[in-house]
Each structure stands twice: as structure tokens, then as C-alpha cells.
Length: 349
Image 1 (cartoon, helix red, strand yellow):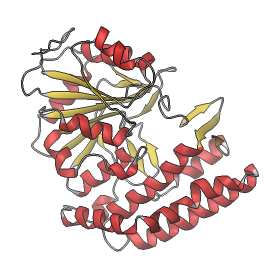
Image 2: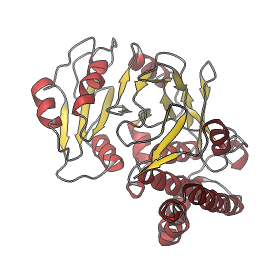
Image 3: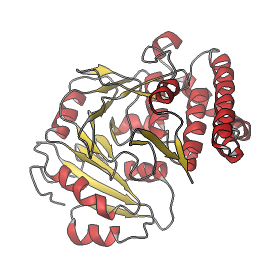
Image 4: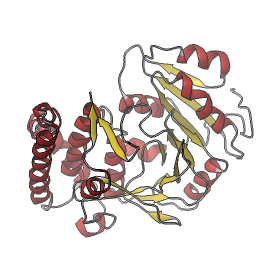
């Protein structure tokens, strides 16, 4: 039997919770992340699992030397965030999963708050905590709403409430429900898998809830680049935007219930291509349009059979219609708000 330091009860054969940490070259981040788990005061039995995605730094050696109580899954090849989390979920018998980024750290009372809420109802739940910026300590969100193009809109309202999605940096879910949803879709690679999981969960009748208690600190964009405002400029990378735009569109297609998906998709693609054309003109760089925006309809066509199969599977088990599904959506496009606030994003290769 493994033993954990701090206030946690030693791991039992079937622990209450498995904290799953996907790691790639995160040696400098792991101590803060793991120590925040070990410091939790909770009666819950907890195991910590790290999936190392073929890191080229000394992450594995560091974990084995300093955290022998942590289960380490070492991948010989880089398989990405989705597969890494799926492997950790398959390796545990825990009742609940807490997916925690290696660039995130729990605040005091986090595990107790999540477990108390999860045990308070028989309904299926996806939970998160208030997210705080690691450097400024400012509140980033309490979960997110969505706009019609499935862009996340940070929710900062005080109090517990139902939201459209939670960021995968801190996502709590019952393991059996995770398995029923199929976990993270491997075809997404990285970026947007949390969006898909939450939309599929809601479609299946689950509640996605942002708690008001405790929280977690997060180095936004630390492990994948971009997604951060610096000196009033929003920066990102071409690879991140490429995956983001593709995977948001894939989620729109596979999770939006009813025939409304098709006119919504048409409007979405038109707006996306206009945005790409204007951004390429402003940046004097046609590769931005080709690599990020034109890639979306190309990928839709290439993967259309797979996407229709996923959509059919999701809709076969749906428990709510279009009106209820769209309740946590907001009509104003998030990108327009960001454009007026920060101007055109800075893109790096």
C-alpha cells in the first residue's frame, strides 16, 4: 500500500479519488503541483498518478527520487494530452477522477469541496473550482459559458452555478461516467478536449458546475504556449490556434443537438474564413489563413465519416433538447469582445 504525506489518508485498494497529472517536460512545475495535493486536509483516500509523455527532461527521475508515493506511467512515445489522461483513468479503480494540469496547484480545501459536492447528489456531475492566475493571483474564471462558435467565455459571477464547460486544468468527474463518455477523444490530440467532454456530458444529462469554494492556481498557457494576455496583447501560437479552431468546430458538429447544427455550422465556417482572411491581410501573412482557418473545412471533409459516427453516438443517448442545451450559451461572439479589448492577437510559430 502506498502512503501519502500531509493530511491525506493512505491510498486504499479502491481510493476515493485519483488525481491525474499529464506531464511533458514539466520538471520545474511538478513539485508545486504535487505538494499542493499532499497538503490537502481531507478524509478522502487519494492516489496521485503522473503520465509522463516521453519527456526529454529529468521529470521521471525527479518523481522517482522525490515522490515515491506517486504512480508514474512512462510513455515511450509522445502521445498527447488526451491519450495520457485516458491511460491514467484506465489505470485506476478510484471512484472519482481529478484531472489536474502539471502547471496547476490546488488551494486549501479543494479536494474536500469537490468530494462533498460530488457525494451530495446522485446526478452525474462535472465539477471545477475557481481558477486564479498563478502570477497575479487574479480570478480567471469560475467555469465558462460558450458563444455560438463554441468559444469559452469566462464566468466570474460569485456563487456556485451551472456552466457550459470547465477548463481541463482542473476537472472532476466520476470515473464510471468518464468511461461511459469514452474519456477524451484521441482524435482531438490536444486543446478542446475539455470542451468536448463537457458538451457531451451535458448532452447526456449531466450538470457541469463551478463551485464557489477554494480554487486552484494555474500558469495559463505554460505547457502549450499562448492563451495569455501580456502587456495588453493577447498572444498565441499558430499550432495552438490551428488545433483550437479545428476542435471547437468538431465539438459543434458532434454535440449540437437537432438540425440547428447545420445552419449554425454554415454561419460558423463563414465567420471563421472571413476572420482568417482579415487576419492574414492585417499580418501580411497568407500562411495564417491556410494553416489555421482553411484547415478547418479541410479537416471537416477529411474526418466527416468519423464525426458523423461520433455525433450519432452522442445523440443516441441525449437527455435534453436544443433549448436546454443552449442555456449556458451567450449570443455575443467572444472574439469580438477580445478584438475590441486587445486588438489582433500576436501569433508565433
